[in-house]
Image (tube, rainbow, N blue to C red; front, side, top):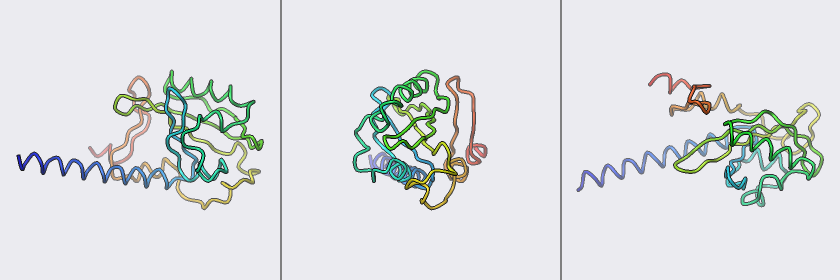
Length: 174
């Protein structure tokens, strides 16, 4: 019984360390990233770059439908792009606009965790050289692929057929 308890505690500790590394990765990237429930398109997580880009400070993003964050004219395009990601695993880059007319590039990928499906949505200025929003004043850091490659945990990205699209060095070393 003691062995079982110690094993559970070790597993729990490993889970906590993994969650901490995920949180650091999520916040370390300069790309605006949101995580949506795939069925309802409700935002349940976002990083600081997304809060800066959306100009909301993050207080009202979580719990809202992602399409509500966009201009009325862009809602249908974003819904189509997110539907494509749900059905095929990823979407084509789509241009969308915020209510303040800022043009953004939207890219989405489907991922499954346990029994639920989520969408990882990346937003970036459509024209970074002319973008003058709050995100342009964000400190320059590391791009998402660089952070993933530097992770100590094995990470692999696959398409819907299970073909490997990208993997970090920790995965290759396994």
